[in-house]
Length: 412
Image (cartoon, rainbow, N blue to C red; front, side, top):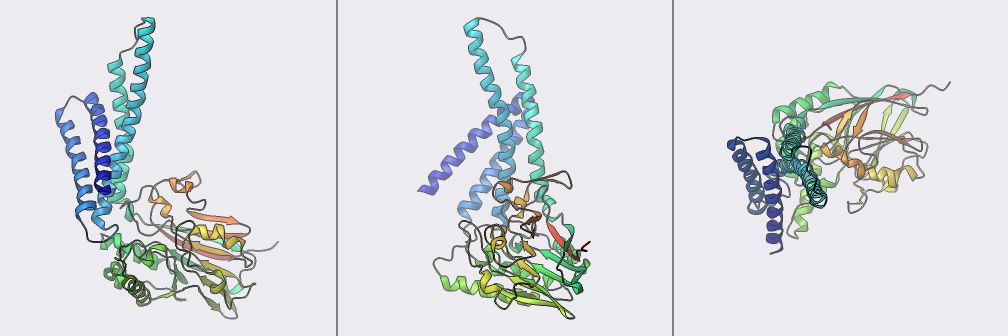
């Protein structure tokens, strides 16, 4: 009953917003087919959403049809909200102007209908920009892979690792993939970097280990001469799937995911560490399970993961959620030279012009949300993610393959 009431409220609000937006379209153009096209599109978006989230009961929290229904809704609501903002402000202006004219008997010096039409055209033009961008993000942006390269210097980097190259990928979310050709291109792009090691920082799937089965063979073609290492992200535990209280099935799902990671070629670090060795030099690679602020799973255990690691070792930490770095890692008694994280996806939406602008709404949730940051002499890279989740696209924040070269800092 509560669910039905929520749908009724949502449909009512959506209809009111649609009606208000329709008035702008009617003011801006006199062609009836434009009105009917808008009504038809609005109804199709709503109908598909209701169907996917009410009648499609396959058990998955967000499958591909549901995510596309959500994506189309986002595009439509963005257009409507921007249109309403312009027209509502105009309506308020007209109310106050009408009251003023009634009280003082003055007449307007400009044509309200012409002003209304101008604002309607302006609102539709501005609203069309994010509307089109969100559709583009669903069509092409989600596979617009970028290789981002960083050279990071450390005074105490072991000499043999000067020039050592790491490729980091994160947040694959294989359950969202719908274009094998694009994923093949991305996997090939990773291999073309010819890095010494590949490090994966969690979220291989959305919910189920089976989501990775169609892609397992492709990802097993990844290669690095010093091996590949991985950790778990919050989605890998299956916590967002309705298991009908069957905890045994949930545990089996996690074990299947661990097996798949091994079959791909990843050495999965579960609060564990390894040493990467070159000659007599070595660096410690530490991997923790997911640890996130707030309601996210806190299975990460630094103390357990660093058992056997010396305090003075050069350390690279894999930790899925950057809030772990902010809340725990940088304050730990051990010095973690470089932490690699993901999780935020850069919200898959924002504006980035290197050297000029770097903005996403996710910055209101995460202080460290994309790229390189430094605190207390320790560095973190927050990868923007390889895949996508929820909204089935990316706008401005493109899927990322990070290549990091470690350099020995010269002391003058």
